[in-house]
Length: 372
Image (tube, rainbow, N blue to C red):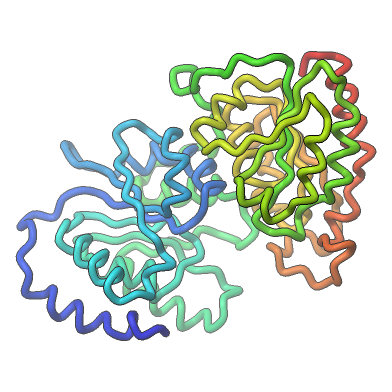
């Protein structure tokens, strides 16, 4: 445990004598995950917003990069950004915790299945709301019984959300069922027309999303070059990613040597408008790809087998018709990224064995038909 966390009892002692609003008010939802998680979360956020009482506000506390997906959320949801990495800095930790304590929330709900006791849970303890709710931590974590005891001290309602390998939307739906005492079938509802961003006007366009936060899940640049070769020169090809991706993996810059190919590094809200103008999206398991699915764009995902049964491919109860997944079933599938095999050409074994010929044929046929 870091020094900053060890000083939490001192901060809580000092805050005990601070005045704050007499009546606890408002709901705070907490998620420490990234942008991809926010795409899935948008499917169930309206249900969690029903936790607010009349005239109460609902706030989502999340990472700064995750807040880039806020345009997907209900309009009345407030966003509060936090840098979880800086919670090891005493000054930042104390100012953040003090501000949340002063706000005096009535209810704080952790939406994270996997949490850190000296970060997310410490924040909730110091905020000292009237009520708290969270999910039982996963059993694969070290010292599970200790983690369970710690969580039991933090949350008034601690919900057992089911097996580790479970679709995120299904897990959150079950959690919402419990808190609201209202059972509803899980679903990944595509955005309603009123929520869709305006489409960028452009010619026939395909977007490629080759980058992943986990390098071992990325296919080599040569695979994407072969894919570009399937696309006629009168079509436009966008290779999308964060500008840092192109700096980190310069070999992918070779894709833009053809005149109909260019890179796209816009933020998520602008990217959404661009996606609305594309005919097809092909990519790996990444936030931009899941955003394309939610927007209703025909999408092909080349995925590892690591999250089979745990989100990618999507659970059959929530998968929409506009997405297809290509992955290699393996005995070890569902490892959740804890691969036990040596890397093959810098990739996980299940990624290296993806049938790229199948992907090339799909793109070639899609372009030939012109309608997806």
